Image (cartoon, rainbow, N blue to C red; front, side):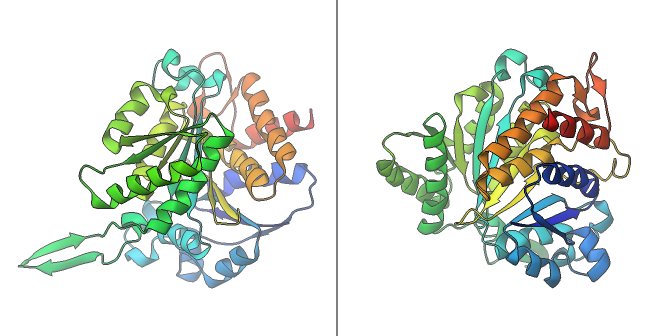
Length: 352
């Protein structure tokens, strides 16, 4: 079982170190090999997704990523920016289904931006299509037209792309509470009228799942008004990017949220939902729990090791119940710890 580890930029190496410690503590005999992605790869090779990294990622069973990006590389040509490395590996590996759980741990209810009674018991799964939409559509660019700069991007989806991500979402809803909300903007965008049509057609194959539809602007409002109405949400690349980040703040900290990006065979890239946080990089204060929980998702989805995944998740819950908090989730009455100390606590809970 081979894991490609990509620490990335900013706080990536710090949080990744703790996740690797947890994986190794499980004694499951993984082969772990490290490579460069993002800004660190640009600095070393001039490319955000070097060939050596691509070769390792293709042969590995799963990829575990820290974070990429930072203002240091913002002035580079667009094709050299760290984010191009992330988009590149997703496309290269055919990772079309992004799963982002938004779970509020009871101990963090006061850290949410919403009232505890609104978010208590929150458990949402957002399924985001990852390889289509306006992010990858052609033509795109910036050019001169009629004496001024003109920027353009193209949004498009094929029926097969929608059907593929739809089945992932329906299957996920079937394993949870049987409710799926498909998010679109069909009143304005023909692309998402097709999205709604295909989702409605798929519903006939899943009579045990209750499918509903919601316009994206209303979905954004409902996430902060009454988020517990949702079980599984499915949407396109751009809408999913925005809504999943919004949902993350309901849980108290984006530093708590893992994610998985899967291909058709459950090979996956696993990463925390947060960014590289260059302002705190190297200070030993970053929250490693989202990366550790991403490793748990890897154990579950790619390797089918449900018991090991549950052990890691229960260890995280135990640490929170014991009152350990990194700076992003700290509140009076809890014990503030750094990155490594949080990793130590999870390892101790894992052994218990």
